[in-house]
Image 1 (cartoon, rainbow, N blue to C red):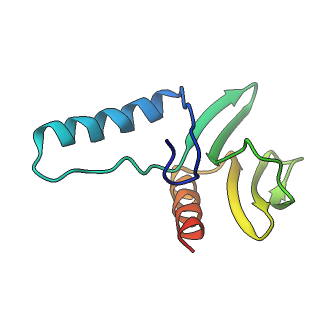
Image 2: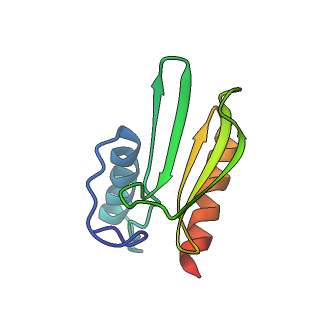
Length: 111
């Protein structure tokens, strides 16, 4: 189950496996239980593009806000369902910007 985005989700990216392993290990050895409440995330490199995907891309967005340009291959696209932010796609952004996107989406989902 996906506690953050709702529904059931299968994530087969190694980053997700690492996060689940860290939490499972901590829960087996620690006294305090940690819930797995990660924002769905994966990345890929295709040709000369590095793309990070944060959130739920399984639902058709009703609005996409683009910051940056496709031509320069450096942009951030925010996907909305109604007024609710559902996903963020980042192309050639820094790890700091990716972490900020995760935080932004987590905060948007908490509203």
